[in-house]
Image (cartoon, rainbow, N blue to C red):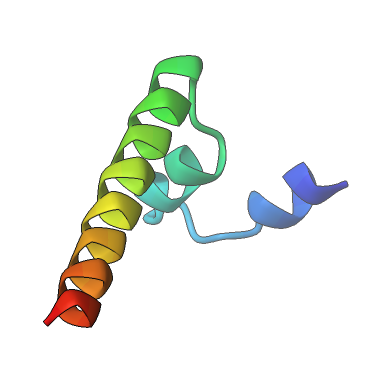
Length: 51
């Protein structure tokens, strides 16, 4: 399974493991960050086209 594959990472990569298996709150935070990033990119591209 994919879980077993991910757990082959070295024990030092705890952060990577947490990002691969986020909790519900972690997923919401990630989605919010993605929304902010895409909004900023879209705004900058739109602003550049207007100029």
